[in-house]
Length: 59
Image (cartoon, rainbow, N blue to C red; front, side, top):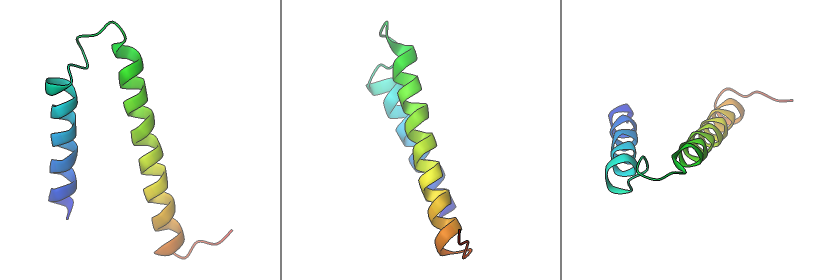
């Protein structure tokens, strides 16, 4: 499962940089800021789900 996740992130980064030309625009800082923000939200959601469902954390 870990190999699938790692290769999925590699594929997504290659597609963003090579095929979508993310670095060729004048607004590349905001594009990468949006990507980093989306990754942060995804990781917080995944970690929060694991925290609540697997590890039994209750508030």
